[in-house]
Length: 368
Image (cartoon, rainbow, N blue to C red):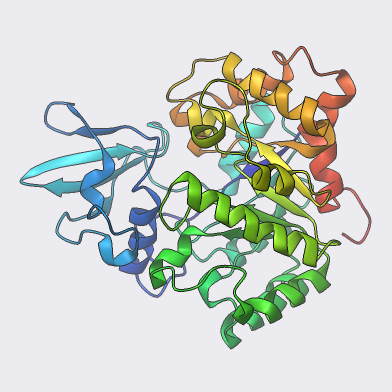
């Protein structure tokens, strides 16, 4: 069985998508793309640009997001803004996405075409407040989708979100949590995810015995030092809750630790990565597909290095569909591992491409 551990469904981004307002939703989107690997171009002549216009340099919080650029959601996978009379577009989704939405039937068609049997539906505040929609998709297609839930991470200890934690797991039946760090920017990074105020949240989550899909961006400064500090904080939670399983969404950051084509992890990071209750996503096309060409020999070398360091049981394949199709096809995103990682044994490929995440999320187990 081939299982994609990282896919998305979402309603049309033109609306609030469960947020208090469309404006709040679009703020999350704008913040999410301040540092994208997606292409930015000026509309009138196609001249390349970058995302620097979306925020004020030196302020990584929501307060630094520019409000004078008319940021908006456009057609054909584009996010748009206007600066000094010129329109710009950022190609965040595939060009073929005429409307910015991804119903579950779109992913089902993709899965059938390339030979993916099951998907994990991840989420994030830029997609919307997604618990009910993810639960709907899981209920409609239980043999095809296992869905995660979300909380507003900086507010996770509040009564509203503690109640939602219970509802998402015990009433909606969602099977894991997606947890990201970039949302702390809305509150100026006043707290870290391991702050004592979140003790009850983490304790309750641990009692559910479900996996945490943890996207560890390098907040607050988006540099190597910030990432290392977050790995040290994560290590504290890994050791505090040894029975709780974690998946490092997006895997290790190439820009910090593989600048010369081979992993070089600082001791603090290597210690965190080695924890038995932490596994890693391998999904290089979404992060480096704009730089590397298929079949991604650079990524293959890094996968081999991770396998040699930690074993294939540590690694789980994901795509980030439908986002990844701005760089390559879904088939290519799968086949660079399925067909081209010749150093992996058949058993190792089976694990990375399905069995590891099935075990993590209880897919195929009765009562899961």
